Length: 299
Length: 275
Image (cartoon, rainbow over all chains, first blue to last red; front, side):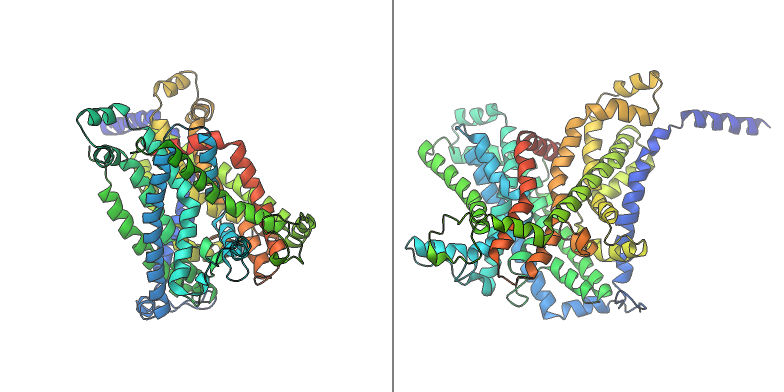
């Protein structure tokens, strides 16, 4: 009896203390579980079947993964995706930081210049790809005619129909579009560096280069981390700009893994395309985790 | 490093960068105003024909008006839904550190780095089963799940920084948790909401990788999907129509950006660096 009383007492105490507000997270968790976590796990199961999206799915074990690594087109897509991401991440950070250092000084029209440099980043990468297509088409693109009328030699080559050059154009267009976004993050990072730190370094006799490498760069670590990680994720899953600028061509030379996944899915190889998605997942997570570890704040 | 560089050189560099950023937009404008018969050998490439009929033709033929409305509905719906559920979740996580909330938060933050394309194919079969393909509400759900981690993260961080006395005062006044959040906390964290909208709004508006899968029917397409379908018909011809459609398509975002650019730059750095 005493025990029962005790249980009741604890229960009422518990009821009094239970705050329903702690469950306000439930709708968000349900939404996320149903539309993100569940498909993620379902994809793991689907990746081991030969499902075509309509009929019966048959378990095929790791066959899809074996097929993937035996498909020259798929292996080339990995190469394209990695080169695109490496080129984009490195250039975006260098250009973004250079822009930020230029803009982090006093001059008239500073706000205006920032808006202009950021403008490309708000436009759909798909539309940006089309605009550059109009500019760069060999023999009939805008730049070809502009150079001709200015009396300059044709500086625009047949870039888009040859392999390494087409990929280079894609990287440069991507860098051109998103340099402003990287710049804004670096600008905020630069402005948060205490001026006393730089002054103290000057008094200690540091050269400008030493100040940059020993004070500015370490202080910029949080901004570098954000930019590197978002650039890696974004460029390894690149889709839009390739679809509009080269459609993966010439041939499949500039096809990215995201586009390959979409085309395999439309080609009724649903099971296989989920296997490719899992491979892409690993390809993204490894460099992301490494770069997060390398840029971890030391305090 | 900067102070050493002569000021003139620096200004020249900045002007060049600005030109580099603006020239493609100028070219698009020129192309969109050239008459269909024009070839560039006939006149200056820099001055268009001011043939405005292109815009009327593009508007009618591309049905871009429908796509703009669809994009607006998807973007507004996604933002409202994620602010609603994400804001409440951020409040619960920041104020009630239960095991349930901690686990959910850890899972969502862990998945934050997974791009949507990874689970789009299995998601497609789920969406087919609940008849959500080619539905704007379906696309809103897809975009919401992709934006949700960012919303929860931003709201949790901002609410954690608020003094707990706010909640306690509201509780004394008889507010429940739900009311406390919407009446007291939510109005205070407007910068968080602004940062979330700024960081995610354009991405939702410009979404293409998911729209390819979930918005195939002509009347439900968003702007990028409608443009790509419309452009594929031409196989590289009729640039005047393509350019005019592209101009119409980018006008809404450019206007919104120019109006809110001050808040935009601030919100972008607030949201990105607080995290």
